[in-house]
Length: 157
Image 1 (spheres, rainbow, N blue to C red):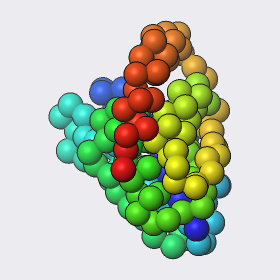
Image 2: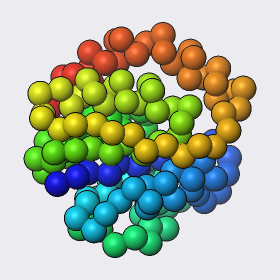
Image 3: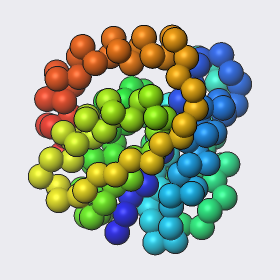
Image 4: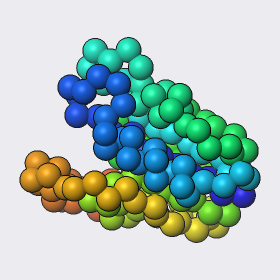
């Protein structure tokens, strides 16, 4: 069984589904098959009445085995821990991580740590939206704490 995990995204200003999140959702629909379980992760930011996960789930069009919504993941670490827990619970053979190309390396590094010992292989499917200077700088800064976060992720059960 495969788990396709779609990471949410918000700029904290855009009402509804942000275009980055919409691109991830579209990429996930391309990657998902009939027997897959799809996990949508992301919380409600700011004054938004709906969580990113709910917005993605309501926009999903492809037929799949099951859809799971996680409204509590607030960070990449929270996302990967949720993915790893569900992967272990379901006993999946493969996890497909769907995120942006500029976010994929960091998210994959943390998810590999969280999946350690589960027997699941990890693949990424990326949406190729353009990285902005602000997103690039944020990703670069985030790498300074990846080793510490990977240790926390590895403790996910």
